[in-house]
Length: 408
Image (cartoon, rainbow, N blue to C red):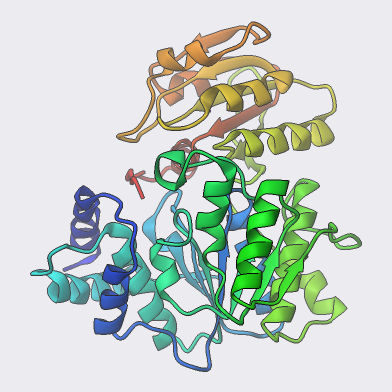
């Protein structure tokens, strides 16, 4: 298969949905010879918010030391190769086609059939092994205990702030969700955690104690370094990343940490783009704030960067999210709200989003297309947020490329 044919096949596996469990991923990794070699360190990152940024900091600082890294994240925003990077460089499309062709042949008769995410993980791990990566950074897809990434033996478990998200899969309480995410802790292996809410903190301590895993809380923001990512919360993610690298035995010094943190880039995290609006401001911020906690952080970052200036806020979301909580958090910085559709099977229609607005909300406009919202004149700086799928669509429009929707 060529790249296009390979992706068509991979995307067709989304029909198998999300399957939480480790038996299938372990079989796939075993039969595709995709487990990491003994000399490869693995850092496994779980949590509700900050996973992507923390992974990006770990990867960037490690690369600044000369370490050959493999980074696996999800979802991608525009193109599939974003998910798999070696030393900061996305996997080549020919390599994607080569591995997907081999994987398709391997699993054609399997029942149950591997999912999109499981296949992507196996592809990444085999590629990292072939490229002789010394450090692999894995971002969980969802949860932790039964996430496919947990099939890979990790040396370091990293837990970013845990909050309410994916309740339909992980449980209705913070204790339930923390139990799922903290399950990535490996017996006897180091655990690095950010400061957590009391319920999550208690669970992490209990599981670490039970598994005799050394636990460190990176509770203080990392100060004194310029960061490539915007927002006070990124200092906490940076501290988590540096602690994780120390635990992994990566030799660090001031210059390598400084270089790695300042050069860190991660799309969709208070990302400024030059997206000129007609008759209005050209400042546009993209941010994936897909739950209330992330939306509150986004609001604080906006106020830090723009003061009392309100945002021309473009918002789109998918179902099974706390839309009311997200909008309540964003209303204080919204000068005008634009509700737009999202290119996802789980998208909520713009007119349905209005029902989640509080009485304190500013004026709003419902749009049938994203382009319509982008073309609405405004003198305010624009903020585009809500779903990762929305940010992917916007970036594709900005870069004048195609956007192929994904559910995983």
